[in-house]
Image (cartoon, rainbow, N blue to C red; front, side, top):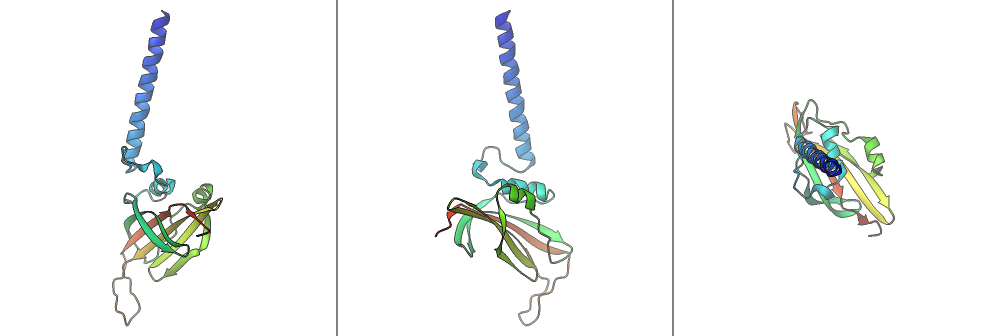
Length: 171
């Protein structure tokens, strides 16, 4: 009798673990995450993009570098293509989520112009810093070097998110 209770508990535990793995696998597949990749080091920001812009198909983050006021930083980026009704795009990050992750807006990372903009956040822990930049770039419909850019929307707009590797801020 005692052995059958232990066996029942072990079987129930194995079933619960199996069901948990199935749910995890389905969640990852639904959100475009390959279950067997090395995404365990992927920034939570890349996961959050799928929540912040649920109808947008983001690329798998790739290793790259980006020139910033803090230097040429290594990190990862993800991009997406969207169609917009105007040449500008509202900021698409969740400020509260960024703050909850320890990031604060950094106006030194902000710049903009016709059909494009970049803005960013930084996080400092000890003497290490990490930055995140968000940007968009709208393709002009008319691009004559002697005249202002023209946008006849709907427009094709590229969104980009760059997350730097942590770096020593004293560099």
